[in-house]
Length: 223
Image (cartoon, rainbow, N blue to C red):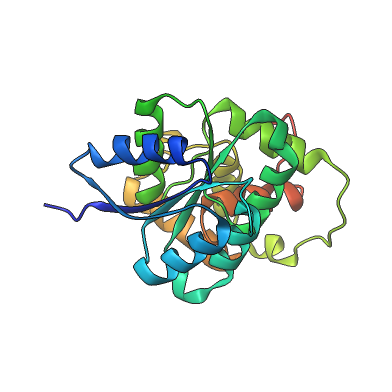
């Protein structure tokens, strides 16, 4: 039997946080190891417990979820921790920054219970929550904004197959879907993605999506 998914919930609204905690604790494969009412507490409990996944609200007192995400993703000792950002449509600008900081996915505050549980399991398994239409919209809006960047020379070092895989990752395809489309084994697809993560020093697939857009391999509207 595999180990349960260890999770921390960070939200300043006690009632909302309690609802998430009750839902998560009802699942046999999920273990709640901490909770936080602000970003400072989220960073503290994350360092102490090393959870697999954090549900992170953005608007919190003392330290917001965005700054907490930056601190957690910048800590090499917490490299395996995945962050799911809790958001609403009016927080797009903050979500863009969270994506840059290394967040692995996004959930709306009114997400259905089954969708939240699925999201936790997806991210804990090492995937990024990129398929839902809201995430694609956020990514495209984010990348289409004027930004200053230098073309990434590492893109020139990719093989034709790696470019193909990277563009598909940007479309939100899972390893299984990559394997089906490219007529390769699941293990081979996973290896290609692992190589891309290494070459771009990316935390996970969410950051590969950003790379695909910022280097011009994929353009807004293409996916």
